[in-house]
Length: 270
Image (cartoon, rainbow, N blue to C red):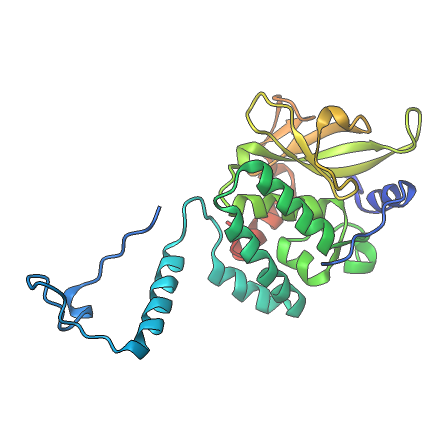
């Protein structure tokens, strides 16, 4: 798009005095008779005899089968995620081992709890840093596991990781938008800088809530007068500002977004 969000976001964070936070239905299963030798369904009870010492192993196996069967709303693939994290490196693997229990815990929680937990996870774990010292280039959109491996990232990296983590626990893409904004610094009349945040919509007509790496508190957009939306996008569309006027297909128009989507799928988030 010809816009450098990266150094601008870093400058904005420094001028605002932002300090980097420290890293810190039941599924039915059917088995063939051959898998259970000795079991007589026509008898008063199964004739399969289990030694007491095998009971814990069978309980563990059942838990594993239930986990592999998935859970309501779950979209992430644990096997792919762990394999991709191992390829990235030890920091990514440690990050996934911290992230996965959080994702699992959020499956049964309401949206307010979900967005709060994911926002807090990345704001605390990732150090706000410009792309150049991290990637050696002026502009790089990191995938979630790339971000966890580096432990450092700028505004769009936070927003991207939060977006895919919320999709992973079943939140519809229609409720989330990455929003490119102009961030006003120093109050009315002050300088403005490019910035990116993640917006959550409880409904299509609702006022969005803003997840930001510069302001830890999740606030409604009306309480962020320092942000002026320019365009927004998600996996389904691209819009002018944060409104309803479409600007085309984000996958076709935003090459970096297309690449991040590919990586997030390979990393098991989708």
